[in-house]
Amino acid sequence: MIGFKIYYEIETGDVVLTIPEKNNVGAISTTKEQDFLMYDVLAVRNPEMVDFIQLPYGQYRSDFEIANSWKVDLKTGQVLFEYPKFETPISEQIHLLWQENEELKVENKELKLALAESAEAQQQDKIENQLAIAELAEVIATKEGL
Image (tube, rainbow, N blue to C red; front, side, top):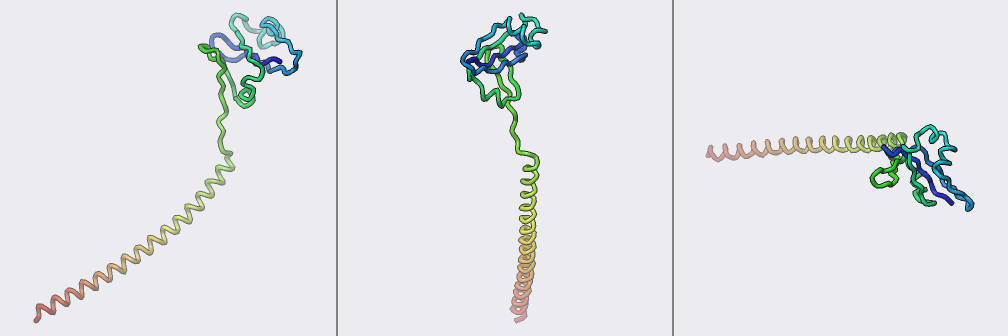
């Protein structure tokens, strides 16, 4: 069993070719020279400008399955993966926004009703205060008249 083989440009770390794992027991590892003869993408390149990493069987298997792309870190020799950004589907986002909008409409209606009730209560308080002031003014005028 042979793991992934990754050919990359030695100046940039950009991957030129990823050879998949071979999971049969009798699989034979190929040399760089053999790979340059078998793969057109390698054959058109200068072998001195390309290097490879041979990974152990099974290493990074799930990463290769879900990653968008990968390259080689030239300083560490490690494979760097770029993963997809998972987002909620647009249809679900629209549905959630619609629900939120409906909830906000209800809340807005309740707030408007509460505001109207508060304004009515303030108006009633204003009337009561004016009546109290009028009564007080009448009491004061009556005492002065005595």
